[in-house]
Length: 262
Image 1 (cartoon, rainbow, N blue to C red):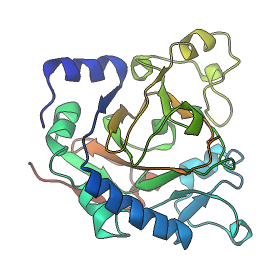
Image 2 (image 1 turned 180 degrees about the vertical axis):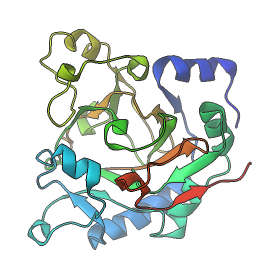
Image 3 (image 1 turned 60 degrees about the vertical axis):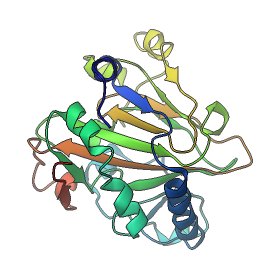
């Protein structure tokens, strides 16, 4: 697949792009089956809902051990981490050759998977999940520039009630003052200068196989899941080959996978 000039311009303008019905249904089902098995057996490393909002900026910036703690034994799972090496079906999706030309267009560079960030099966478990507040992913990442995007795959329907992704269009191009963020670098919802921006939020209902590509500086969030069914999604991050990891940081704690030209 190759993006049209209009699609590429839309991504540059808004900071995100939806590719409807991109992943085949059979591939989504295979991913979901393996994900559910790993969730059922709580195969580490995992992140739980325990203390998610309480984690400090320093923890999110520096800690690279993604395993849960003993006191989290029965806590709802928020995400399966480090999924690239868990199963071939996860690896195949992250190395998918059909989406690679799109990523090369967006990055204007060769594509490199970074295993240090995202590389996850994301969940919103029914009634026990917590909201994800407005934030920029890039705030805790350590690279030479901002040429990173994330690829989100919906494995089922995603909508407002079960925690669909919401974005502030164009926020990846904006300059913000430090006082617009709290001490954990979440975008303040009660800040006078932020309120008009938040009102511009975009929420797109997703279906199985839909893909969303979004910029590392784009402000985004997701509400909790108020339905009776889990919402399970797949997200990973890529960068341009010219974007260099800062050695000695959490971003350099895991390998990178350089992908050849499609």
